[in-house]
Image 1 (tube, rainbow, N blue to C red):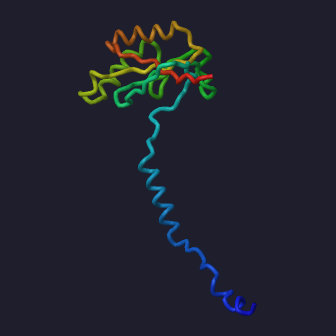
Image 2: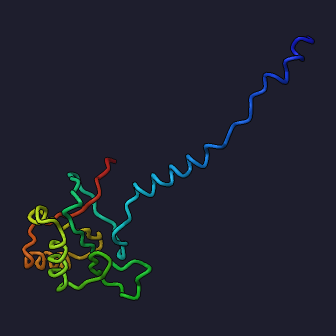
Image 3: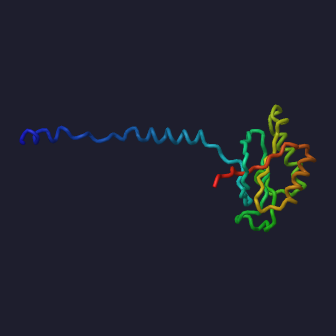
Length: 155
């Protein structure tokens, strides 16, 4: 028994060194600063999308999104009627054409013929507003229009 008592102090583990912890924290901080993409626009309308069976991913480098829906709770001063949001602003139906043309002009020349407009329309929006948006897109000669939907989950 006395033999085990002699080595008791020598077998203890040394304290864990935390000297490299600040390096790891700063490495993670720089990684997230480089890898994070800031959001271009904030959503100003309610937007619960319908579900669909066949959904494809869009290439976002050539896509502009038009949102339609009731103004969210932060923007109730704009009323209860469904509104159109393009980038970070509410626009009227007659402003869709110049906004889309300006967005298409901002793209690289190689991507301009492949320009697509994504419509993110709330479930509660009536079809008349969607039809008006589509008419304005036709006037802007923007004929590639996609309806954005959620994937349908099996029940």
